[in-house]
Length: 156
Image 1 (cartoon, rainbow, N blue to C red):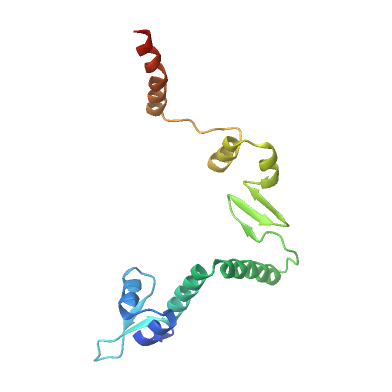
Image 2 (image 1 turned 120 degrees about the vertical axis):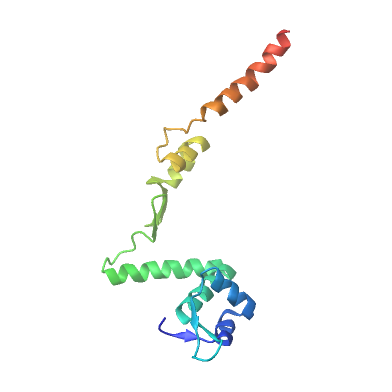
């Protein structure tokens, strides 16, 4: 830990009581070390406290969090020298950029126009819109029994 805070400083930055600060430490969200020799004080990592305070602020105002994420992405692209605004957010599942939204590489608007709910679910789940997940054998047997049993009972 390079910079550390006292209990009162950390509580003030987070807007919490000491008991809540101790709970954050016990969950591993904030690191702590012993304070000055001969005391029972603890010191808390300033970076951890700032990061947690930032996450709390994002939860209180999600729109500001999204704006910060977008701005951070744009700043990163500029620093990398790309010059453009190609993907703002990119993952294995979703790509947002250049004014489009795509799921697993397929444009969301074309999915909305042409695909069924089942096809979109298959695309999201398996990555292949033509492959629908199959039920396990036990579930298929139960399903076939549920449909066959009423017919058999009415025949009696």
